[in-house]
Image (cartoon, rainbow over all chains, first blue to last red; front, side):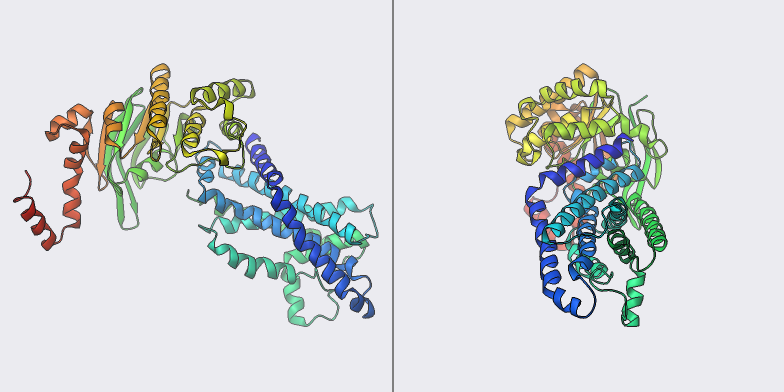
Length: 248
Length: 265
């Protein structure tokens, strides 16, 4: 539908027009890649783990997607504060279409960001085992992007201003990343930690991406897909419902 | 049939009754001023008319559509210029208009020409490809008027449209509005705290206070009714006393009466 397209287009335009934000977003992933990949790398290799940079690269890409996705979803709060949201709410377009347009738009932006982080990883020395399975990597990247944009929108539908943003970043998004198996393998994890990792949908996305790059799926390809689909479907439904309750 | 009709409209937020059984009508082609002090129930009423809130009870019709049951029909029938800017600052003026055109399903064929003519109407043609974040308040308001008209609505709602505008912009704005009102019989429904504005432009007025309509009519009839010479005085007479009663506590009232020489008529 045209409305979904124009909302998507708006997100894309806004992304490309915030040049300083794109440049700024390079910093964190690069730091992680270098500090952890090269800093912790030698010790990880010594412990028998192999190339740490190769291990964490999918996770760092997922991090880029995660942060951008949640942030894109939360943009709705900006829209509300700066009034633009009213314009969409008053238009003869269903709330569901608006939400879908925002979600797909935000997810596209997050996906592009993932691509940028991948480029950075390659510059930093990351070499995937398989390039033939790259479409699969993109697929998992897209799932992560959709899932967490929907999460961002669901959260944003309940917040009235950006004050809750810090809370969300520190108590939701950071834990989602750090407890997703992005930075550490699952072998010999303390049981409590293992449970948390298994409950985190991002873990399956990271596992999927890592599996597509090096052929090893710790949870299993089908498990990764199923969990991501179910989680995305759930959050899209929840996000839709919450968004329909939003009052400008 | 009136183009806007409100009958026995009630809106309660829990225990608070913001709108308490109001009824009024606006005829097609009118420039209608909806006046009232802050907290009177103006914004709540407009939100209900523009599908942003559901009434607790009562009936509303815009262009024959029920904003609750026939939401999209109602939405296509009106355009709205909100009190606070609602543009996307990161898009250009033209892009903002195109966005609106797509949301309201204005066909691709008519879109371009209509946007061009509206930009001309509000004198923003040569700024159309600039980012809205670089626009002044007046320019943003003019752009929002253009935007509200893209889908050729029957009614244009304006919530305090001239707040913060300089006199030149204000005059130009009313010029545009009066022109489209005359040329296209577009009904204009606005709120304002500037009584001279209502006095000069409005062909119909309703005054709301404490959730109730306290008067309807024209500028002349309201002045006659309250025995005053300006609409502002008429307004103050209609709504001023109500405020005093609300905030009155024994001491203050007595003091007031003392200084004013024993109370008003």
